Image (cartoon, rainbow, N blue to C red; front, side):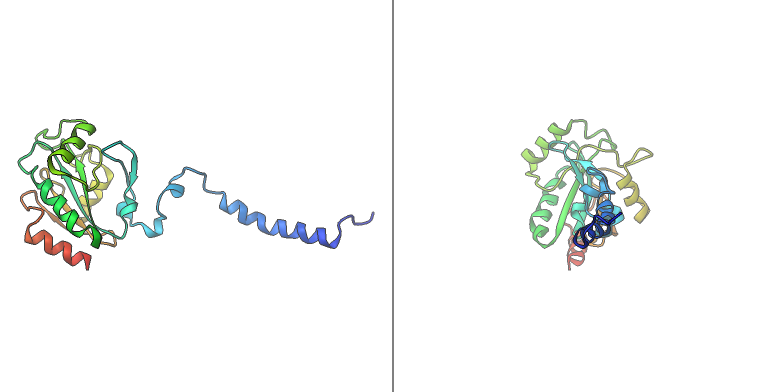
Length: 201
């Protein structure tokens, strides 16, 4: 029987067979999986590979979006003797945001039951009372056996979990925890400001 494929047709078939593996490879990650919606793992430090709902509307937020920034992580509460530190935290964020600083707030009811409200109540309080614009996340557990995985990693990095509300962890641009500060250390203290400025350089 004569070969019914012309040389041109043979070339087309050969080309098609050559590109099939590439197409198959491109489709190995289903749409909607972690790999398709987050920053690639190779550009996001392991410490930041966590997701939390945003305080205002509970939209999922991946911490990988802050990769490459200097990050000050704070567990907050609305009815605490240190609650006024919101003002200092917002001032830090406003001053150094353009240089690469981000402050991340994690409301928690772990200490003294001083964050009893729901997300809307917390968000309204933070904005209306202190004008908070830095990213805030939904109420979570930051201490004890039920703490979230991000806080487990923070504690492991410096061998210290929060002792009270407004404990602070400083993360450098490479995703490494480089320092932590107790609640009694005010956001605009010389100690914290110097550490932030050094990390931003």
